Length: 388
Length: 90
Image 1 (cartoon, chains in turn brown, purple):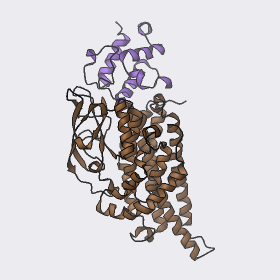
Image 2 (image 1 turned 120 degrees about the vertical axis):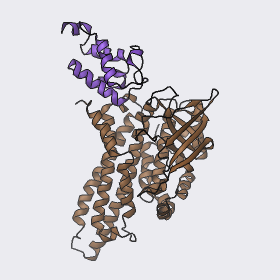
Image 3 (image 1 turned 180 degrees about the vertical axis):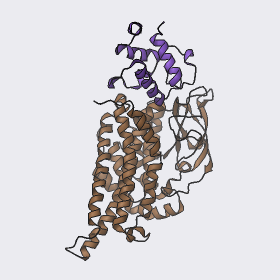
Image 4 (image 1 turned 90 degrees about the vertical axis):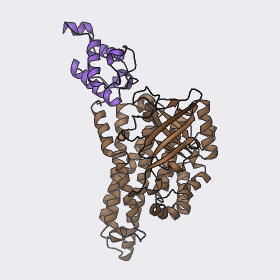
């Protein structure tokens, strides 16, 4: 993907500006109403950030994953739902640009950049139990160039606001459950019938309702590679890295609130270490480990992302699974520690140290793709890992 | 009479690969993943092979392609010294 066209520092500064000027202003309302953060997504569009991961030759910004992750991490400090929507959009874009080689798919990527299209996904299915690598629904070719598919999806985040929904399905009616493709279902050809609402503890603005999805589309917009390869080489590592970056940003926000609280207390009584100061030092150990883990896995993935043998190697799969588990666990840990430091000021909903919304968001991390499922996969992989 | 390595592999696949079809309907070169074997099931097949022939697949063989067909598994075992001759003399 060449050199990043924007430095991590510049991207972070841009994200702080969007966060301060837009995301922060609407975040509380997005949370209370469980509504789509339209203002922030429009701000992303104004900066062409929905094309961040699209190469410049296709009209995108040509950011690398580290730069895109820096934006997600920073916006998350202002509005977790907005940042999560950007992260989930980027995951689909990464799949499109890395596994869509045909001219039609490259043209579609050009349209995503030019028209700042928002991409959603439907990768889980009712009755399967959360395993993205298995499908019941299937792609039905209409004999010409089109396809249809119907899927019962337990969640499609921001499905009603997306321009396309990337949907997994069996390759055809006779394919086994594991022989899947990823089909671009453009929303003009999609009917969504809600099955469940989205009234949750946190990440309320992602509007991740369950739907029956009925789609008809252009068969040329089915990605070239089998979904199993897309998942291993791109979707899973990109998802775990972007989610972990987002959770890190939220943990850093909680940590800074605690740090400001301790600093304020120190100013009131110079020369005396405030009661929370030792806890703050302990919190910084967790925070530093968290940041270092995300950074090290980012470096590792960027160095092997174009080598399918390396991304499907047991060592890497164990590492990228473990990242999701450790980041989601440390996220809750940091917020809990921050809460003890800020005390009643963090517990209250009306102070500059309030941690309620971050705490609610934090508990989403372990349950979105449940850590127990990932631990099960990791345990299975550990059965075939060898010492080097 | 000793069972051939191929027949033993087929027996292990029938027991552990959780294919969507009867293993007897597949040729030695048919893609097992295409026939419905998940990556989870392939780990079970690997463990069953290791137990059957009392061996350990080395790191470089632990990739998807090693377990992609009966022939691939037989070739991998051959590299580890398991073939019909060695089984017959054991």
